[in-house]
Image (tube, rainbow, N blue to C red):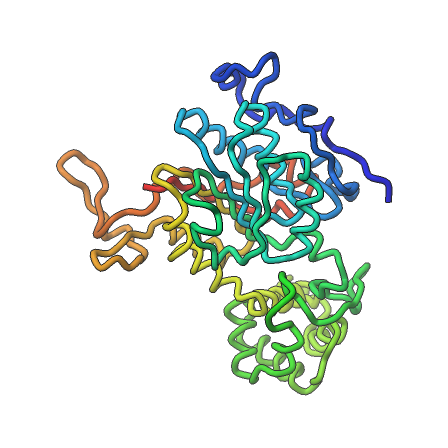
Length: 387
């Protein structure tokens, strides 16, 4: 397919009064337009063609709002050393960071793209090869150490969604296949990386009780519905393809329901596939490790952390984590609102040492972005500053 650059369509993102803080000639540092010297590696799909930095590999979400947070940090005049994209994917958010820093005259700030998927390393490294201050780190973000990054970081982004590339490639096994309109069957894989257990291992080898817990906890499936689905999965073993799993779900699920859209087969398949994917990739475990160990060790004091979530379970973890404190024994725990008091000056105080100051609570994408990119509809952006 012929490649088409989106660079000419990039908007001016931030207020004009921020533009004069550094001498960058006639160009504003917040203009992410034609100043970037890299070129996209693939043409965007039609539904997201006008989304900044979109390619066929992935359409990054809420770039404008995230760059505003980076600009706020730069405007504080604190020295910047490293910006980390914890979920690099095809490099869309990373390219936005690089273009912004280039326009701000901050080419010396390193941008590190982290991802467990080797496809991401190949795609992002090729796409961003003209930026000497970019490097890729092939690792699960839940296992990162300061040594992996070269020291503390100033700005961190974690986009917890599955990349468009992974969803759209039938060989990765994330799509329903079967009777879904336009669906293409693939192997029961669903791994975000190239190692570890696959969806086939979960579906064929896990005991019935474990599968039931996965569907209820990770997919939000009602207990009795999950019980029927799991029983049919067990009866249908072994399964190796996504259309086989989709067919098993369809056999015990009404195709549609007049009174409850939750009971429709399409929505049920979406919940089941999501649940299996979360289990295969240990997404909740990685997220908990990220907040319990990784972020407190890599983000410097007053550094900024932005997290994009797409599922209610993920969002609840992030929301709670940004309220966490270090106990006197050093362990991290969430502090409930009723445990927060006030000192003589009216400042909020709680037990132990506070880790984060919340900057933004669950901001949604703009209506215009949601119209252009339907995968932005469920996105929530939470932002906090390291206390």
